[in-house]
Length: 230
Ligand SMILES: [Zn+2]
Image (cartoon, rainbow, N blue to C red; front, side, top):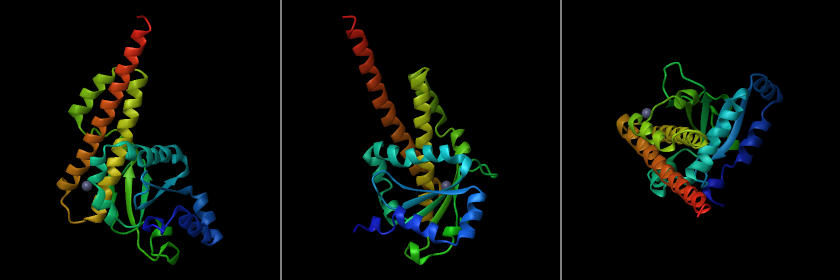
């Protein structure tokens, strides 16, 4: 059995349902939900997204970033986080928020807040997990690289391609914030500028690759539509 399988989504689901009924009922009424996922290439850690029930569609977007977009980024981007992911806690809770009072995009949590995961449990291998929050709407309005982001907009002009570009751009930002916070969790003494440099590089490279392949497809489509008149 691979180490990554030691805690699986089934382990988490079993653990959550093994808790007393009144606790689960109270949690359900309060709208608290959990979604287990992991990065698309099955890397550790296992991720548990904790969210409020009206945010289900936001969780889907985050999940797509973690699973689909992660495997599409250039391998050099994934490799930049290789050691960090290897050293990461086997289980990380991501509290999905819409915004943070402080205006930050996310934080690592020194003290765990999410009740079911706040203490090490035998059912989860007796290990303590890591925790962070990400501020979804704050990340949506965040201009990661103002100059190049605007320059790229011009390449897609308008219409459905621009919408698709913005959606991908946003998911890559979500992904870079999650990686940024995992970096903080694993190396708490690493200065902010170094953590930031790595996550911004990740975002820049991943976005550049997306733009490059999208433009190639666009050029191919134009070629084909012209050739029909030939
Ligand atoms: Zn930071």
